Image 1 (tube, helix red, strand yellow):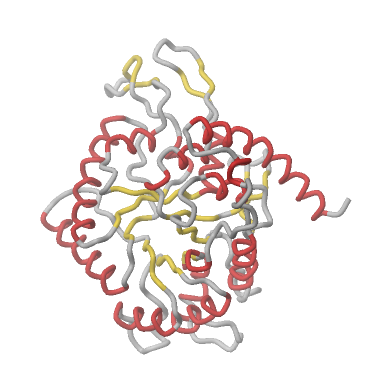
Image 2: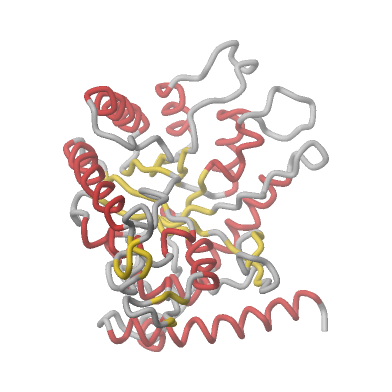
Length: 361
């Protein structure tokens, strides 16, 4: 059996396991089953419409930040975004607004970035900016400047690549929710949606009960996951989410047991699809990042181009609800190839676009 055949059979096996859990949860929540999604009149439609196919520029950060060179590979915003548009992407998510100053003799401006987007038929639809960790006059003023930049770029969403807090404790998530509701209200006043992006730890279990440790903090869990607790504390029209589907699957692999208030071990398998489907309109953005399953690693997956891994994106996008609403951004943290292969990240961008465009259901 060839490597590709082996990978496909493995993907089908994992997809069947995840799909069974996801379809059952989605059906129970009233969003329909996989069979309904693929039923008469709905088959063969593209799952990600052309105008919704996006990329976070972190995936090609090596070429955004590259100095002018003779490799023949695009460098800097103007050249890289032109190549992104040529591949077929229509949306971009920023991961910083700077490039090598050797290109212009100075730093590029948001106004110049907007012109490059417009010239290439691209739309900014998100940015991993800085969301303040405290509320002071200075942080409020800084966030207003972040919103100013977002308005210049014409983006509909403004967010961060970090979790709302790295804490395991309820009190810290309560405080984070208060901040995010405030900043979400500021964003909404400008017609923007504020969003947070998850890593796997955000879907670990909240420590909210049981005996206290020496610092007075709870040591056990009621079984609710940290980010799902945050869902209920934040206002649905002010705070939104960008699920990183790869990291959500890592959470499924890593965070499946907790100790209940009575000290008993409990098992609860995380279902990324059901988490989205039960609140689908709170997830306007996704990171469509693929992973090859490897249970011998801590995370359980290794990052690969979209379509070359074992995460069942066809099942996920077919059953998450609100078809056509979501904006998936391809991401691959390890796409850059370094000096030995400077064109790798843009090649992976093309491979991943083709897979995203080919998803039908």
